[in-house]
Amino acid sequence: MFGNLKDKIKDAHEEMKVKLEQVTQTGSAADGKVKVEVNGNRKVLTVLLDPQVYRDSKPEEMEDLVREAANNALKKAELHAEDEMVNMAKGMLPPGLL
Figure 1 (cartoon, rainbow, N blue to C red):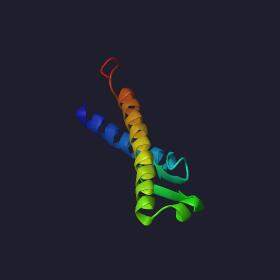
Figure 2: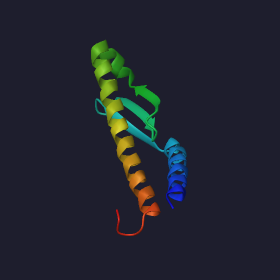
Figure 3: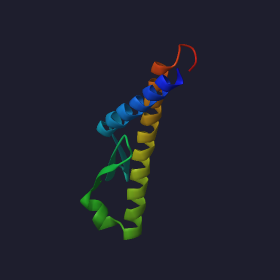
Figure 4: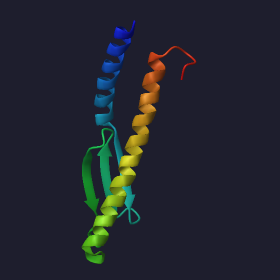
């Protein structure tokens, strides 16, 4: 009984990793002048900086803006992954357990 459940969990985990690889989340800072895009597996895909950020910001400020945008995107990816895990668990457990 538990061996079958273990196999289901392993298969679902692999399926989720593939699915999350295709999901993208974007975080931004400085009113959208700094954007970071990550996938559902929390891998940074792109970092976009408006040229105005180069002109108007000191290096430390740019670093803070990139960090803020990245953290926003990563939080969105984390929440999406949590939702996916709950949905996956619902499909494996008897009704009413989750």
